[in-house]
Length: 441
Image (cartoon, rainbow, N blue to C red; front, side, top):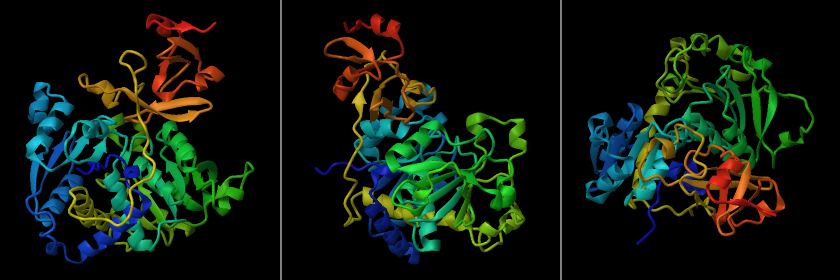
């Protein structure tokens, strides 16, 4: 029996697979009504623990255009979740005989990865807290590819709420994989999280450098802009001194709304930047396309809606053919010639009670039953680890070995010699001692 493929992160697809999916989506878009023969009799289940319009409807439209059916649980607060049923149990039931694929949206980071561990059918992450939203990213990349003809080496401005937008996090990882140059122009206080910057540097070779964004005009007037450029191979890697890289050309501006459902309203949000015709008149932006994952609030002025550079409504429409390609592929109805990713991140279990994830919104903290604490090593020297579900760094001061029952300083040579599957992390000596570990002599 072939291994079940899930789409929890955009990293679950290789670059070649992404490019082939784009070609399939382009074929689908020529006549969306001509593909009902691909997935007859297949059923997808929409499990949405958070509100959604475009993502849910485009998935359901895509499934029906492929000839399949849809089960919708668009308001999970009226489901058995209201009675205390865990996500793991819900997934076990739905994947048992109800559906051939699950599309999941959940407020907790890492929820889709947990669901994939319990599911008997493919799971697609339709957004997990402020973590990732891979199919929105594929839609965004597809739009860039259609409009610009390529993805490598593009210069893209990401503006607005970069801290809590899961769309931004998935998108920036994908752009880094395609060696794009990314200019981050956040609203103050809503900069990229440290764990995202660390992952960009360590896993994708994208090096953050302070940016001179003065040429961007209004869009950057109150922002501390950061330029993320591929460390190699790229001409910008030659800039090794402390100078700010000048932003004088932009292919796309990607605007985001304030994610107030995650951080609440504040006085600062009232001053949130609005992108309009005047802002887009800055010289580097004159040929740039304007993108937005929607819904929008006031961050894009209505005076841009009829501008040929504004593509956010086309962007939403293109979610249907790209999601058709994703669904058909994961259901085994559309075979790709491209190979899947070569390297898969290995997760190592963490014993309950040792060091839980520090992120209160992580599924390992919000799902009280069926916890599967796990970590992934992000560096051996110095020793660092991240939660296997939400990707946030795990605070480590001491490292223990589960076989010797000894603990060591995190940066010691003895700690680096411990096998990954024998590692235990501690905040301090008191925690290590309480759990039966002793210091080495």
